[in-house]
Length: 100
Image (tube, rainbow, N blue to C red; front, side, top):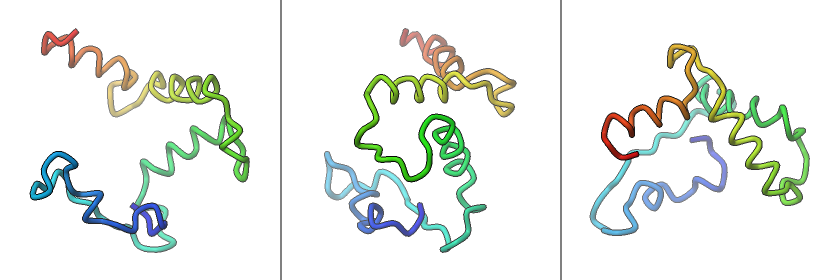
């Protein structure tokens, strides 16, 4: 995570909403001004900027546009998945588990 105010309550982010005593994840903060520590985040920002320019009022983005962006990201072929999309990999994994 970066040092934005949306990440100010680390214990709340790490905790479970179902069990106060259960820590569901561990959150790590990146160093300030070190975008290279957030590679995946920067890549997704690049994807989103194909559709929404920096500084745009995101409150005015339609649900249809958001759906178009998420479909693009989820169906984009990735080298790490053998040039398959994350959507394709997820469907195969769920199929292998007989969840589809």
